[in-house]
Image (tube, rainbow over all chains, first blue to last red; front, side):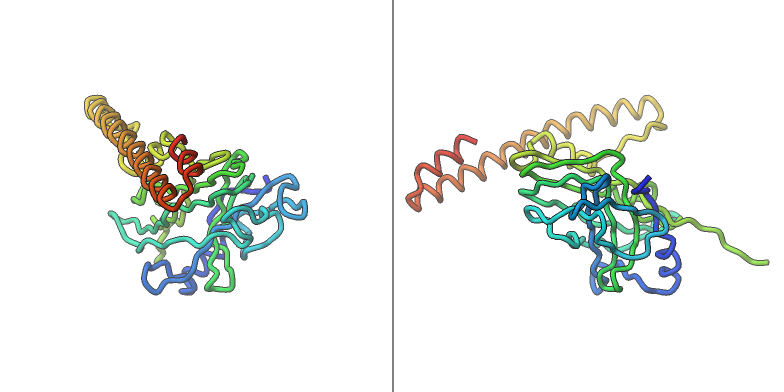
Length: 151
Length: 96
């Protein structure tokens, strides 16, 4: 599969090195970029993303449309917290409006840290908006469902 | 040997899209509901039934007020447009 949901392996190492800061105040700038498979990306490119992704790439990224600009949208951080023995963090939902987009997945990356990759999201099917809204809703922020969890 | 085993995981996201305009009231209601209440499949039947009933009730209230908010916002926009002399545009907005 060209886009495979995964926590990037390089990110796990970078966590131990203190590269990423998810705090709401003073944290890094995390972005979400959208990708297409099957030559749907800009310049007819297809995305290859997964656990081995280490950095933001333009290959396969969808073209700018509406409020989506290449490089993706900035995510609003929610302070990391814990529940039981699990630590987790969250982001506010992200929307691109008046956009014509077909995307199969996304990459979350840290633009404050040389665009280092965090996680790959696989939408499993193509999601399309036509002159409309493209919304990414993050899961409930708890120990079982939060977008990024350390158990 | 001393070792600590842990796991770093990423969860799936929910994607909602629309064509020729923004998300509709039903889509916004579903987005909100996904944040408001989760009923676990593993919950005991009696608790699950009560939670599902509560969920349905909250969903209806949310749907109503989201629809109301959209209508009231359109009314304000239409009023401002009409006041600025854009009567045709104001009618267009009002009829959405």
